[in-house]
Each structure stands twice: as C-alpha cells, then as structure tokens.
Image: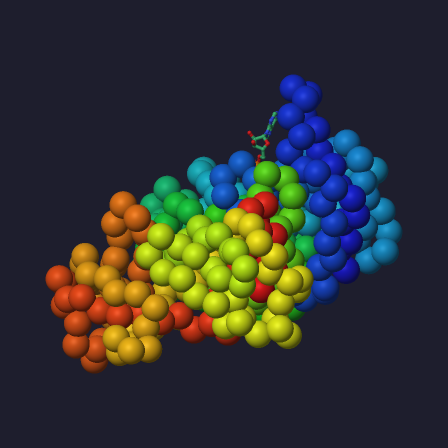
Length: 358
Ligand code: ATP
C-alpha cells in the first residue's frame, strides 16, 4: 500500500536526516516508527504527508508515486501531538469543519450526519457541544483523531499522539487507537519514542537510529531476534545486560567469569566465533540463579525491586552492570550472595561494531 524507496532527506543546513530509507506498509496495518529523539521519525511522516520534499527517493501509494502530489491531494489524515483543534469551535463543529471546506464541500446537514456517525464510533457523542479548552487531554486527542477519520483518509499519520497524556491515560488511549483503526481498517503510521507503546500496539515496528532503519519487523522479533546491539538495547525494560568479553582459543572471558564457546549452538551462529573482542547481550530473565556447582560466577545482590509478579535483582558494581528478573516467590534479599548461569540459547553475541552473530 505504501512504499518508501531509498528515501533521503538532506536539510538546507547540510544535515542528512534520512539515509536511504526503504520500507513497505501493507494496507490496513498499524506500523510504528520508533527510535530515539532526532532519529528521523517525524521527517519520514512529513515526507509521506507531503509537508517536506525528499532530496532523493520515491514514495508510492498503491503503486503510484506521490512525490509530486500536493499534501491536500494525498488523502491523508494527520494528527499532531498538540491536537491543533480550533478553540472557538465546538467539538461537533471541529469535526464537521474538514467536510465543509475544500473538495468535499458537503452541506452542513450532510457534514453533521457523518460527523455524528464517527463521534459514535470514537465514543465522544456527549462532548458534542463543548469547546476544546474545556476538555481533558485524552478527550482532545479523541476529537483530533475523529476529525482526521471523518475525512475517510487512505492513511492515518499520528505523530507522538499520546505524549501529552499522563501514564494511565496513555495506556487506555493507545488501546483505543488500536481498536479504532482496526475497526475502520485504515492504514496507520504511528510515531513514538516509547518502545513499550510500540510493542503493545503495532503490527510491525520500524526502528530507526540516526536516519537509518535498524530493523523492520514483527514486534516480538525486535525483542527475541534483534538485528544488532542498538536494537537489543533499545527494546526491553529493564534494559538488556551487555557485557564486554574477549575470546581466545575457544574461551570467552570476562573479568568475572570464563566459559567455553561450545556453549553456543552452531545453528544459531551466523559466523564462527574467532579470537577477538565481543559484547554479549543477555536479557534479565535469562540470567538464571543456580547452585554453586552449576553456575559460572557468584555475586552479591545490591538491591531488590518488586514489580508486580516479579523481582528485579540488581548486581551493579564498578566491574559489571547487570540485572536479573526472578519470580516473586524466589526467596532472595539484598546482601545475599547468589550464583548465576546464563540461558545460553537466548544469549546474543555482538561484534565490536554491533553486528549480531549469535
Ligand atoms: P523527536 O522524537 O525528537 O521528534 P524525530 O525522530 O521525529 O525526533 P526529526 O524531527 O525527524 O526527529 O528530526 C531528525 C533530525 O533532523 C534531527 O536531528 C533534527 O534536528 C533534524 N532536522 C529536522 N528538521 C530540520 C530542519 N528543518 N533543518 C535542519 N535539521 C532539521
């Protein structure tokens, strides 16, 4: 449905915000553009909307190039983080407005009928006569999305739509957005820097860093099968443990432990582990407490944090930064010395340049 091919954006000051970005979005999918501040998410959205012109590359909707198409002719609904509602109009008038201007130019009665139909869908009928200034952030957000949907766009673009809402409301509205766009069946691109938000609502996630796509994949694959060290560290909370190691003659060495490279199954190895420097990445749930005989090193627990059904054990020190997650039933306390092993089949190995080889 949407194809982006070798997209490049250089701003007037010579800054290259996007470097050869390519991806395809299937009709009806909800895709998140995810990445740290400044990685180019909004730039991609603005290029798709036509608010920016690419320096190079192609953008196609249903097979046809839109690069030369005016923004107003791209049939796109755009919701910004500040909602941009008209303050002097009621909610109903805000939603009717796009239908009564431009190409559509419906009569007031027709526009009202359609607006009310969509307001039912988004559950904001009771707000109809209110002015935006009197609404909560979550309500304003629903109005802004309704106003975008009422125009029956082919694509809905949402730029950090939840960033002005408090934590609890974010959870609620993100579920609502997913339900709504799936119900309407509209192709949706959702920009966020919040990995949990992206994991929870997306059909696919496109993770960017410094204008380059790091991984474009199903949400669970970014967690379970990260393409590189950046992806592994960006996805997951608490953050993955990353430990520098050196390999020499089949032995993998860290200041605190040493293990045989035979622990790593051949079928998961993308290339042989030769002598040199690497990083291992191990998710907190894959750092296992075990008995002294079976473990690879011992360590004192610095602090224990209870989060719902699990405990996070923190082992940070000058020589290591590491966390483990265990079930709430595990009887461990601050100051206990425990023995670890790793779930080797879940452990990632990265080369010094971040490329993953296991
Ligand atoms: P955020 O999450 O902070 O909104 P983002 O990923 O959406 O970040 P963009 O707004 O796409 O990032 O910006 C990408 C990069 O391009 C940033 O480094 C930004 O400073 C730069 N940039 C954006 N607009 C311009 C401009 N008009 N001129 C020069 N540089 C720009």
